[in-house]
Image (cartoon, rainbow, N blue to C red; front, side, top):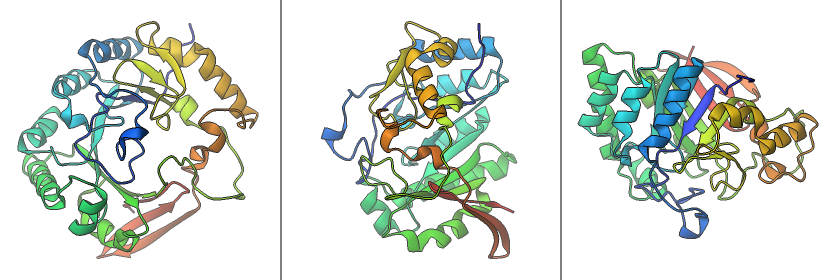
Length: 315
């Protein structure tokens, strides 16, 4: 059997969320949700972890999807078992509202590899406006405790990544955001704002040479009910490529007829009839447009611009 496997595996433990962000492609309005809300049954992720043990391949396991993973009551058990697999690096993205002291202690004690924190700007008024039900002061308090605990325990993990959506109204906060979080961050990303329903990173024609989308080869996404979606852009599972109840992840990755068809079309740059892909620019999302070093508060920072984001790391 062909034993190729993606570098990144997304486990959507739940598609429920405690926020209702104004521009969320799934939770902003009820009519955007084309699938039911739910939580992953433990037997689904147990099956995934058993397969990862057998494969013994380096995989980044990401336990979030269209929802907030800290709502999932079995998350601690999942993370604990995942950390017992040497070849697996595990972490997730959170909006930070539920990242209390108990969870901060757990993440450090388990030595979770990475944590992505989704915060929009440094101004509480604008953050709490765009991220409905969020409270920036509480989020910063939660993160502050996590950082203090890491320092006290002399722990390098979890590595912290910060993500801000570049809404036009808050782009003037970009450098203050970098200034605030860079001292404790592994990386900071300012994501390109895409209106609800859009998978485009630019309007009209752009002089960028097409390349097949790496997500079709490097990523697999498992929804809470065990259905495998085409990629992370397939938020409503419009293009399901398999089910864990019927096949292993390795079998789906290597032999799913639909996935193989999409790959074939990408290889010949024929996306016009592909659902999702025909109007999607994610294939170009990480192409480097500009790279430079900047100095901010005596910090040397590398700035890398791509169509989907601007990324900041310590130089």
